[in-house]
Image (cartoon, rainbow, N blue to C red; front, side, top):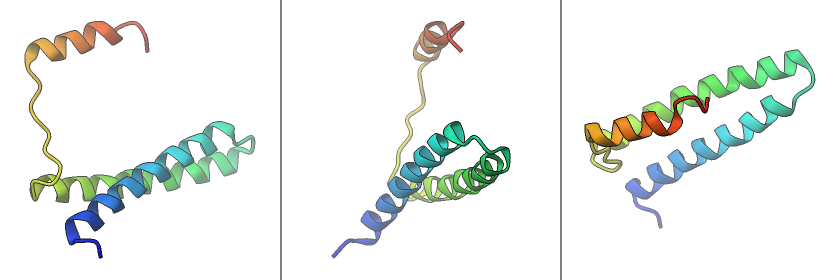
Length: 83
């Protein structure tokens, strides 16, 4: 049987997987109304995913260390001009 922590981790992973699938659906949908519908669902999933992440973060289940300035600068330099 799963613990409560494992269940919330599974829920977060499920939300992430759903977001990936909807992203593909948005990209591949030809019909504009269908695209917009998928995008609306994605927005709801983003909000739910954030609530789950925030809950886990507050409970210490999803730690997010602060990035050092050098790592931030390195990431900016790496991706600058690629987007």
